[in-house]
Each structure stands twice: as C-alpha cells, then as structure tokens.
Length: 270
Length: 287
Image (cartoon, helix red, strand yellow):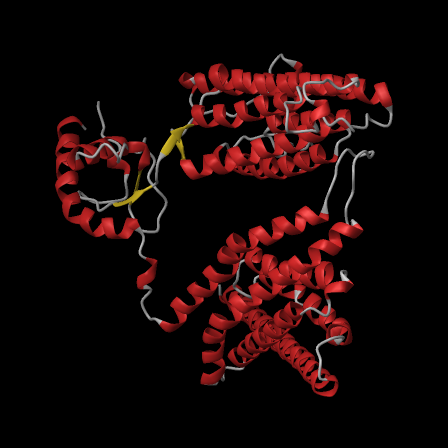
C-alpha cells in the first residue's frame, strides 16, 4: 500500500534527521566543552606564570589560583557524565577514577591542609597537570574540528612519558608532606566509642592511598593510554595477541583430524 | 542413541595433546574467535556448521569446582569472626586479650554470624546442586579477599572493647533477632525448594513455584526470594549490632544480589512463556 510505504520512509527520514541533529548537538557541546576547558587551564597557566614572574617565589602561588583550579578541576566531573551517556567512548570507571583522584588531591589534600600549600611538590604537580590538561583538551578540540596539527598529536602521545612520572612524584610527595599535619590535627577522623561503632583515621587512609597509587595508576591511567597509542599509531594491533588466537592457528590444522575422528564416531553412533 | 557433544571433543583434545594440564573444565571452545563459548552439553549435530567445524580454543586458566569455592568463601568469615570474638592477642590492646565483652548483644551477634556461615557451609555440602563445573582461580582469590576482609572489618568493631550497644537497647536487639531467624529459615526453605526443582529432571525445565511452606510464598512476588531473605538477614544483623561497617556490607551485598536477581529474572522471563507477570526480581512490587 503506497501510503503506508510513504509513511514508513517519512518516519525513517525523521529518525535519521533526529540522529543527525542529536549528533550535531553532541559535537557542538563537546567542542564547546573542550574549548572552555583548554581556555580555563590556559588561564591557570598564565596566572601561575604571572605570579611567579611578579613575586619571584612560589610561596603563595597556590592560594592565588586555588579558586580557579577548584572550579575547572571539579567541572571535569562532566566528563564522567559524557561517558555514562555514551557520547564519549571511554569506560565510565576509568574516567571516574581519574577525575576522582584529581578532585581528591585538590579538595581533600591541597586545599584543606594549608601548611603544605607552599611546598615545591604542590607546584610540581600543578605545573604537570596544567601542561597535561592543555595538551589533552586541545587535542580533543582539534580532533572534533577535524583539523589536528601534528604537533598537538605528537605532544599528546609523548609528553606523558615525562609528565606522568613527574605528576605521580609531585602528588605522592605532597601527600607525604601532609601526613604530620593530619596526624596532629586529627582532621576528617572519627574515633571509638561512638553510636555507629565505626572509626576512621584519615592519616592511615592517606597512607593507604599512597600505597595504592602504583597498582591503581597502572591499571587506570597507563593501560588505557598504551591501548590508545597502539590503536592510533599502528594499523594492525599486533600487541593484542592472546594465547587463544595463536593456538587457533595451530588448532585449525590439527582440528580437522580431531573433527574427522569425532564425525566418524558420531556417524557410527548418531 | 549416543550422540557426541562438546564434552567429548574436549576429552579427545586432552587425549591428542596428551597434556593433563588442559583438562576439559579449563578449555573453552568457540565457533568464532570472539564468540561465546560452547557449553559442554551441546550436541555436535545441533551446531550451525556443515560436516566439519573449525573451533577456536582458549585456555581459561586453572579452575576450581563450585563446592570448593563456596567452602573457601564461607569457612574464612566463620573462623575470622571467632578470632575477633575471643579477642586473640595482637588485635586489640594486650589488656583485652582473651577477655569477653560485657554486652549480651556481642555474644548474640557472634551466635548469629556463626550460625549464618555454618548454615551456608551445610547447604554447600548437602543442599546446593551446582550447574557449571568450575570457576577460575583469580575470581576465587578476589571473592575470598572480599568476604574475608569484610568479615574481619565488621568483627573488629563489634567485638571491640569500646563497642557501644544499640541505642534502643534490648528491644532493638530482640526484634532484630526475630527477623534474622525468620530470614534464615526463609533462605533455607528457598534453597531446599530450588534444589528439589533441579533434582526433579523428569518433568523438564520448570520455574520455581510457591509450595505448602509459608516461607516459599515469597515466590508469588519475587523471582529470587533467596536473595531477598539474604538481604533481610543482613539488614537485621546491622540493626542488631548498630554497626556502620555491617550496614556498608549490607548495601554492597544488596547491590550485587540485585544484579544477580535481575539476570535470573530476565532468564526466567525469556525461557518460560507462562511466567507470572506479577513477579519482580528481588524486592516485592518494587525491584
């Protein structure tokens, strides 16, 4: 029936249009988000440079940029939302852990323990974060605009080799420097006896966080980055051979013998 | 009429490779490198292939039977809690070694916790009929760490010298104990009924239904009442001890069991056309 066919194609076109507008909207939002974050971290970088040039020292630098840092780092929570809805194809857990560890460092270590704000390690991880984030967000922006300069791509895949260990060192040293102050003040801690029969010692929590840096960072940050490198720079992913596929090649030649004997067994009995 | 199935193929595989390492439970055969693995019971004639088939082999790693797994997972919490109850030295301060708490609630909690895990061990040996043969070693280590670790954490606080008894006193403890007992009996009844279902192969595959036992009447509302009763057990235990770590364990267990229950519910709905529409996965009328 002609009219129902027409209705069918009209509906299909409407669906396609909806999909296209949805993906145009998504791309527009993601582009805006990445440009905004690049700009934000650039602002942070400028503020840090200006402070250092003017004052000649890093003491008081954290205080001066604390609010901007808190805003932009917390806003990165939106990325977890992106993964959850599916407009960005990354695992929610991986992104979640990365963003949470950043927010933990900013809100629960650097901002709340004033005595360590003038430490060199804090400046170290701030600088590392700034460079990393600017590279990352500009990479995403250029990719969305379909115009990726080679330098940005090169930076994304090579900076992290130096920046990553430096960042981990900066964060670990900052937490280590904070330990005596946490112990003395007993902050964020709850002792027995209490109505809920639970206790929490932020001092030991920080020590456990420091110890878990190695396994967590390896699985959550390094592995996904390595996979990213493999799939982007090589056409064939030679590195993802599993035991299974190697054996499959051997199996196939022997398999014919096995299946031959099985099929003869089944012919006799089936 | 004997028909060959995948299990025969796996046995022949072991024979050809003459390597006892690749025992059948450890093999995973698929028709497609990325496809789902073929079950042992699948008959070769029913496979979607011609006269010959190419199968892909994957080593699943060392495997342990379900009974061993359940046994390991449940013996740990049982013994660990008792270590804390009897205040073995080096856990709490030296003065408190081998002393006992003045609160009755602590002893009741120990009795309940021990009873719960003893019941599970007995069910593992005598009641449960497990379907698949095995579980990979890594999963077992992970599960054991989870159960043993949590039981150590909650036992530490309940048996601590500075433990605070529940705010509403004896009333809270007694009501919680009654609910605990009801849920344990319910859980046991459901396990019995499920194992009877499985043993009764003569009538083909059927879904569980309520029987004369009042505890099984939860089957009217829920696909997995064993999980519902289990959640009830732990909620009552956390009310009885008024201990936040127990509540955390309850919440995490609830989330995991909801995931399992929803999967089971979906499988039932898909398999049985006459499945009762009023049933939900784990919480009557809600979830």
